[in-house]
Amino acid sequence: MRPRIVPSARGDVVAGVTVALVLVPQALAYATIAGLDPVYGLYAAVAAPIAGALVGSSPYLQTGPVAVTSLLTFGALEPLARPETLRFAALAAVLAVLVGMVRVLLGLLGGGPIAYLMSQPVVVSFTTAAALLIIGTQVPALLGMQGDSANPLVGAVRALADPAAWSWTDLVVGLVAMTLMLGSRRVWSLFPGALLAVVLAVVWSRATGYDGRTVGAVDLSYSTPQGVSATDLATLLVPALVIAIVGFAEPASIARRYAAADRQPWNPNLEFVGQGLANLASGAAGGFPVGGSFSRTSLNRLSGARTRWSGGITGLVVLAILPFVSVLSALPLAVLAGLVIGAVASLVDVRTPLLYWRWSKPQFSVGVLTAVATMALAPRVERGVLVGVAAALAVHLWREMGVHLPAFVEDATLHLRPTGVLYFGSAPALERSISRLIAEHPSVDRVVLHLDRIGRLDLTGALMLRDILADAESAGRTFEIRGARAHAAGLLVRLLGPEARICGDDVA
Image (tube, rainbow, N blue to C red):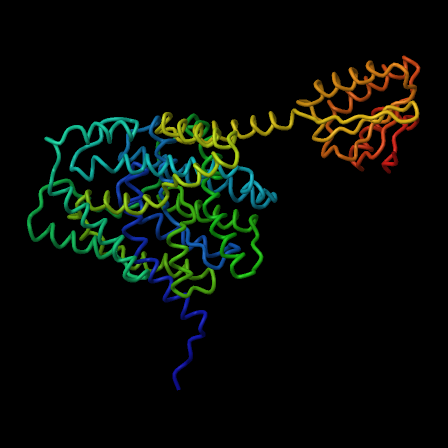
């Protein structure tokens, strides 16, 4: 009697093979975004899914080369080495290891909630700007030209402005590949249109003797990263931290969405560790930083995956394909450009930022600043993220600086009930308001400050209250604090002493 294959195993195998057929052309294409020869994408495509399957919280998450992380990688390495050189590849592998170490450390230390720290306007705007930059990097290749500018958008504009230099053959084959990939999705979501485009392009290239720009000889030989100095490592630390956190936003979003749909728990700390191991493996294999892919994860779930081992199957299938990748030497780069543009076009989100304008103009401004900074600072796109995060924090602090202070007098007692957050940013304004109200009511002999509507009190705010209390008592008035929450009450007691009039129960 033949042994039965359990449904979960069958689903994982089918899903793993299906995703692998999509991953191979994507890995080749995304390696070019990172400034590497396409073969390095295959290294990452083998090691990352297998290592990512060992640890993780989501049963569907597919890890490997992704577009935005590839662009971040290029931005981090471009100032240090010339793209498509052995030194550039060595730095990419080291960067992947550093990203992996950061993610594993964050996961083990319980840093999973960091995935929620970036505001939606920052994430959406950065992703859209990054997608536009990625498209810009591919426009020259789509036209059969060599990019001649560090900023992808500038290079794209220059290429588009010089139609005499276009290769119409490259443009046609690139657009056909893009159309085949996108059109196949509409016919059948599981159809590997990108792989079919690659196969047909290779056959066409060899049959016609195509003499344009191609992938070229594929060398699968492996060499350990060399020539990386301590200065290089120090320079890569900040980009590694940015990639580790920013690059986690996409897999975190995917995993949370499907966990909610399946009514299953999701552990960001465990996912951080899994994504870290995937990057460590990619770096050790000579690849580059990787992340969770939205499109491949969706395909994995749709194809019947039940456990995270489907990712391991994907990596093994790509490994089995490696001995035959030499046939890709004839693949036109214009085809990869078309596939990249088709893949990342869906990341361009204009509608959501326009909604931010209706919902919150300050947040809309944060999004615009993030997008503009990302595109203007290219290829150092990680700096655009830092600008966006700083702007979001500035807007938050600015909004929290205002503390509403209603007041009323009852039986010679002035009651003050501030609403908001009492911290270093809002303390000076609140101090002026309290002093003004006390001065406007010289007949009161008692002041009661109700803190039940204060969400948070920091040391600067507590010191301000100490000064107000001292001024009131020096003027012969009794000063009481009521409704302080446990943390605030404890801080005030330590600062003012147990004899101070502080009450946790707010009784007017």
